[in-house]
Image: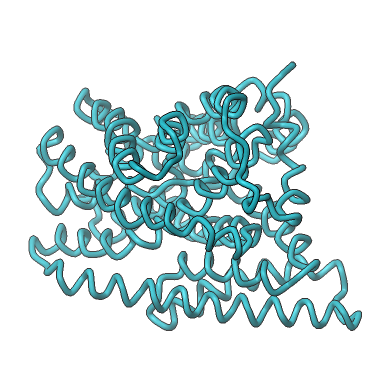
Length: 411
């Protein structure tokens, strides 16, 4: 495993230019491990849960720390469209398709639709950092993926309770959802603001030892998640809100700390995808059929594209941009977390749901991984330039160099 990580790191730019992404490689490695050394299902699930949740927190925090508050306010209307209109429509469309195509009970259909609604910017990192794609569109995809998992988490929890008890009350669940989101934002913003201010102040006085600044920010990201959980808020939303606040308050110290977090998250994500291949993929053996495959295709296409197109109608983005944003909604770490919740809460009864979710994730890993580079380059070549007020923040530009070479299309 360590040798594969080294080889991937050494040749990652070349492989990425050939549309071979990290998730594709390491899911394959996991499948090879499962074929040669099967893992205990319970132990494997626990390992994936802990590692996946920590990785998702780090990804959300580091991505959010590169978002300028001014840019966030400028395009608040677009974020509201995607999250307030597009996301609920995506959940509803996914649930209806699961009920119709898979003949799933209502609560199971809702669980599938909600678990597969959030997107993962890290899985489409080539698009998020591709220099040909306008910074405004990259931010739009990044912010959407940072917030949508937190918004649907309460819906997933309500659906899980419904599956387990064949009952539940959606009204109180949605009220809890609003409370969890609000608490998560408040706690995350408070932790990120305090941590960013302290890091900037200590750095100005020479109190920060450079070798430990990165690990400190890594711990701050986990602290925002833990503090929100202790306050009955949404930890993933808190991590994203904390990252935005930290990036705003930390000044020049922010990019260096976020770089360390991003590197750590990158390594952890490779391990997550390996465990998905080793633990989750074997669950699919003997359980796949045409209806599951058909649902995966629908989930990645019409279930995502139509709601996004409807939510962005009249936004002035243009048809090419809307279709580009609609297609790049890869399913990744958040959906993995939700499938693990289903395993923990439902046991064997949750296996049909997990099969559908994992099948869709794997299809997304392949489809979005292969198309990210070529479509980003093609779209970027004809995309309108950013509007004057929406220039990429300087700290974003400094951090983007790590993947620009790997994302640049071959000459």
